[in-house]
Image (cartoon, rainbow, N blue to C red; front, side):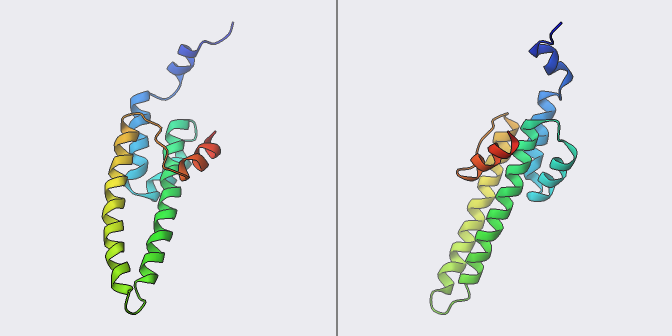
Length: 122
């Protein structure tokens, strides 16, 4: 006899626990995402948010590094340092938003990066 979808869901991870773990993927920036990628391979929802957290962390670090390097330029360096502070504040708010969307059970994709992650997770 074939297994129904409801039976498969009962054996799978708890939906509430998946949402909590997905939100946790963003909590320690990329570190918690890496840990969840290592230890929660069976849940595609958690895996998606964990990988998106890692990819977003790498992208944010690269962009932040570029802004910091541009900040040492004479004359216009102060502008880039100001932009770096604004960037950091916006990044913090966006990270909280990502945590909330994961906790709500949404598979929210970060523009551009989310599609790459979605293809990897499958």
